[in-house]
Length: 393
Image (cartoon, rainbow, N blue to C red; front, side, top):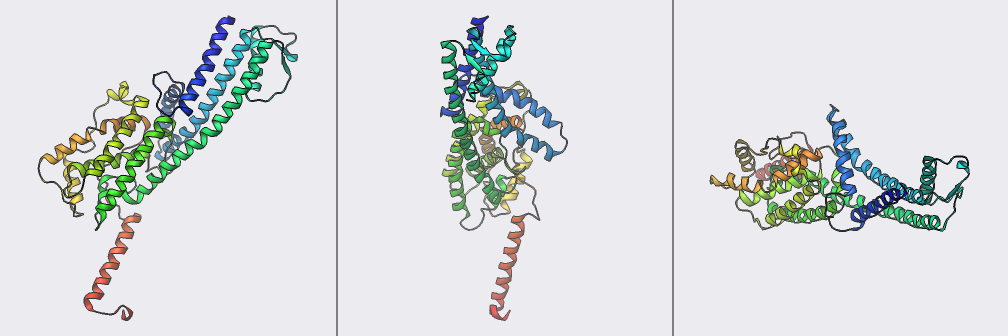
């Protein structure tokens, strides 16, 4: 029994140490399926989804989903702490609990001894040092000293872990928020191209794709190292890191395969990096290997009739489209490179993907500003045609 307790304690402590090292310190994705953090996220996310899906109100459901990310972080730290306390308590129990507890003088049961071991382990890990339980062997003293050091290291890791997570989240959300004025909310490829149809807009779009190439690389680095960030949602229900990433992929796919007269080199570079991030993040959770996903019917985000509607929407903004019949086929081939991964992640994280063409909004901020600017330009043109000085109007 005592040997089994020692082995169990060793597994608990080494498991937490390895998981904390892989989650916080290791800069690359760990290999192997059994990882405490991965198992914890997968096991806790499924019941959370079931609970959230019972909410009929969409805003309430999104609010429930938004709580999971920060809450799961706290629960993960709590799980580590409980496993460490249990592991060291099993160590004390394996050496016959050589501890003097004034509350347990008349109780000699194994459960009472293990309760004392848990108490000593908890107070030692969090460095309380109450001194009401005294070790009576050198080995017990050595364990207590070692656990105190582990407790200090655990607190230091937590203090350093939280700022890194929230800095990565903040950097991610800045670009997602900036995309609102460039591609609408929710973002979509047609709106992004429409808002860059002004003179010099294609150069501006190239610069934007350069920024999103770097953003995709940062997402790849941070969300692979800290997969818990995938569950952190944006402040607005119509925005998410996944919809932003897919809308950029849609834009790159259009620029590469369909639209004429646009340089596609930067679109290719951004597409490769964004797809890399999307695929690798999906592999962290193994979303495409799940039976629930494989049993679902395939979803086509852009049927043939919607493709021609997309061409009409872009044609209204004086964007030249490739008119040969193979254009739709080329776009479909490119979409097949990333859409299955995006759809699987969307179904798993419960984050909706953007549409290709959004219905026009008449009262949104962009439409109002555009109308004011257009009216001002028309008024100025009328004054110039009449040759009336501005001061006389």
